[in-house]
Image 1 (cartoon, rainbow, N blue to C red):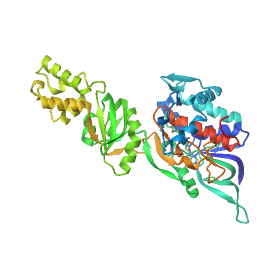
Image 2 (image 1 turned 90 degrees about the vertical axis):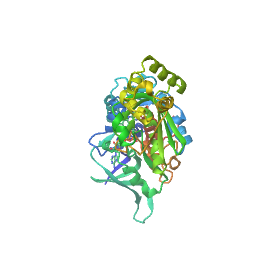
Image 3 (image 1 turned 60 degrees about the vertical axis):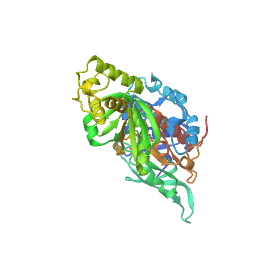
Image 4 (image 1 turned 120 degrees about the vertical axis):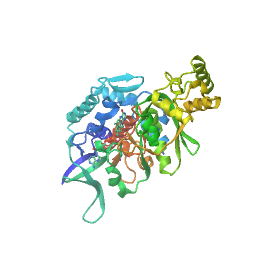
Length: 419
Ligand SMILES: Cc1cc2nc3c(=O)[nH]c(=O)nc-3n(C[C@H](O)[C@H](O)[C@H](O)COP(=O)(O)OP(=O)(O)OC[C@H]3O[C@@H](n4cnc5c(N)ncnc54)[C@H](O)[C@@H]3O)c2cc1C
């Protein structure tokens, strides 16, 4: 059995950061990665550009059942320190309205910088090796000893410290298939239920088929049985399974958990959020005065994209071919109402395959916030998406990965806290 000082399971964003920090702390480090290369998911982030953090930081950007603890942890290694850290290894920030990317706008350059740093520090990396179990060490008298035996599909390692950086369940094609939850079950850690987050929502097929391919600058409000759960606005994409785009991603984790609780979930789409209802109705009337012989479909042309208009017109009990001047006052009011508030049932969320992150995970109450060490299992450290924190879209999930990887690496090397 080979022995190592620090074994990191998973060479994703947080695992590489943890490995580097443990090596900088003078430890011999081995990273074990089941995929053929490290950082596969990192290459897909930010549409291949890697939005690695965000200048705007507020507690609500991170969702967790322990929000104060999440925020406290993030203060130890915030975006400013993250940017300085990456700058040191060669990555200058490219700033798009506070959203930070490598200045090359290429995720590959950030990954290569991490790989070069691991090489410089002599961090060993085993690819295509999958960790199957982590066992506590017992001596011949049957009593527990420090350290853990890490069993992989290729062999066994004796590790003084183990950092579990296996990610959550989102986007399993990139390697994160929830293995870490399995390894850790033996320690009876509190688990917050897992749900896909940052994903599209499924609506009735008939609506989705009609509007697929359109986009609108709108606002979405997610409700469960009349209670507002979350709201967001921006570019909304109308797709063949339902509704997508960043505003929908932002509210999706609440839809997933409400649906799992068996609640009826609806989404209200405001397709013209900058217009109030009265102004909108007056504009529709003006258009009819200008040309009463146009169709209901023509009436919305230049205001909204065509397929969405069709759905809204039908949703108001009208037909696209109705003559505009023949639409009743009531009908017009209904149409303006649907433009401002089109309510649809949400039947599901896109699932972990298409999600960008995982809501829920191992409770933050189980780790020391200065080192990410598991209180019930000294010598085991947890990082990243495995834990009960999911950030909103915009660099927050990677920030969580960097911060927790940084703390865990330092913790495993014997340092802790803010220095
Ligand atoms: C398409 C997409 C785009 C995204 N874009 C952004 C973005 O722009 N900004 C942002 O902040 N966030 C983004 N995210 C989210 C972000 O990438 C993740 O939250 C982050 O990578 C999580 O880091 P992690 O280290 O916890 O896990 P991961 O990066 O998922 O890494 C886990 C690693 O562990 C390995 N592993 C798992 N099980 C085992 C095992 N048994 N043995 C060995 N190895 C194992 C996996 O192969 C993987 O390499 C995006 C996600 C996706 C899917």
